[in-house]
Image 1: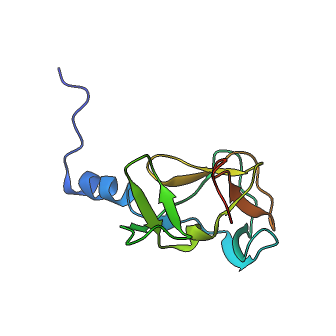
Image 2: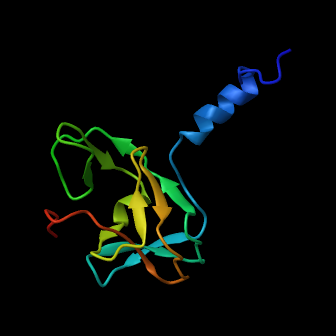
Length: 123
């Protein structure tokens, strides 16, 4: 007796593709930053673990200000508003391997969304 069937319907295939698509959650805005140039800010509270977005990317011609190094051999340019996430040694968000950005702790309305880009990061 079969209880679980693989998700193969057109709707389930569409949903799987949709969940991998870049997006930015409602409640974020770009504004001037006290850290560096422009920054990404919460315009609503985000709970710990909330998904803030998934990066839209392109292959970089040269490594620039909005280039994320994924490992020793790969990099991508972030081409959506998530590129405005600035560095902080005490970040409130993290990029996961699938380029999803997730709140590490509660982020309050008006707070800048930050990520720790590592010791080698320079402005």
